[in-house]
Length: 83
Image (cartoon, rainbow, N blue to C red; front, side):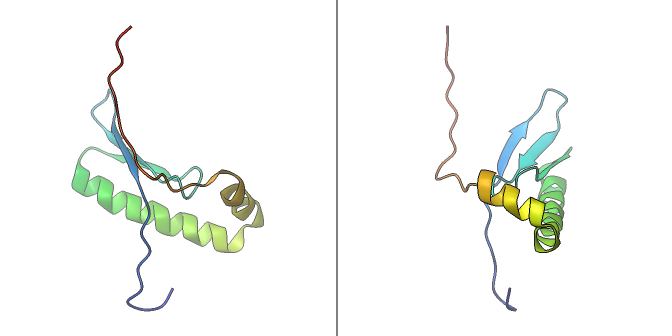
């Protein structure tokens, strides 16, 4: 990546039953982190993405997982379904 060039990744954020925010990055299988606050989650998800990028540069098995399972969602939504 060149200086001044940025990459954007879609992140799915959930709020779990223990009041943690949990973020996953579909572009990198297994790239997940959590935090008690959104500002802390933002910091941690950036660190997690950088770590996954680093692993992808050196680990051919992880690059293969990325090719097989990674995706960038077009849109993420939520709907309440009653039964």
